[in-house]
Image (cartoon, rainbow, N blue to C red; front, side, top):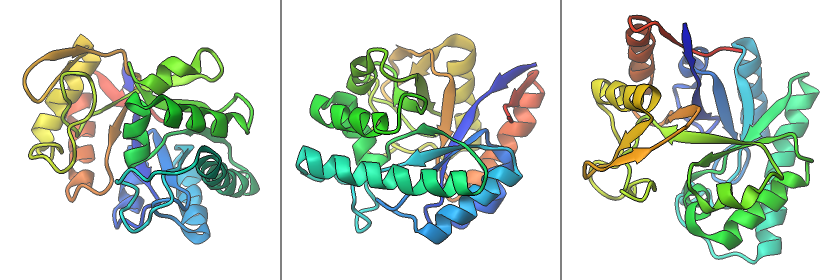
Length: 245
């Protein structure tokens, strides 16, 4: 049976974490930049361990007011200090609980900026490399950050099952209509196209090649639990299952 790797951003103050955790392969835990406290990090790590879910850090611009979804001009050293501190806080908690931090996925505007901004991308890479080269970077295929890695880190290409794309492979801005896919049937169709055909269909109909090996669903979508439960059922009919460690 073919396995599909699903990741989800958690520990962001949402109400669905407890229901989502058993349904996913990996979680990306907010670590103080856009959301998250020491208490929520501890709680989310415990949930992940209970359900055998891979644990990753989800750092962002330090901007809780805008939930990390606004680009913040920062000096490179200032941004690096913030990102290192965020990753460190979750790494220490994870290891204290007897678990392992496996990956890093930038959040929101930081993720989007790393798609085409080499300066921001390099700061993110340098921040992760402060912890050695064992942490895996989740990144968009074709992004500037994935090109700058150049063997310094392992990269896992990510695609979004519940987001629409522009023809260049970037995500449609959340402020634009149709940026988020909320119909569970459309999410399934979007996901199966990527898994079976290696194709993302952009919002305007263009086909984008993808070799993504992890697929994100957002926890703050109101029907996120319903979508994931539906995916589990429908995938099983197609001899597919969502990976668990």
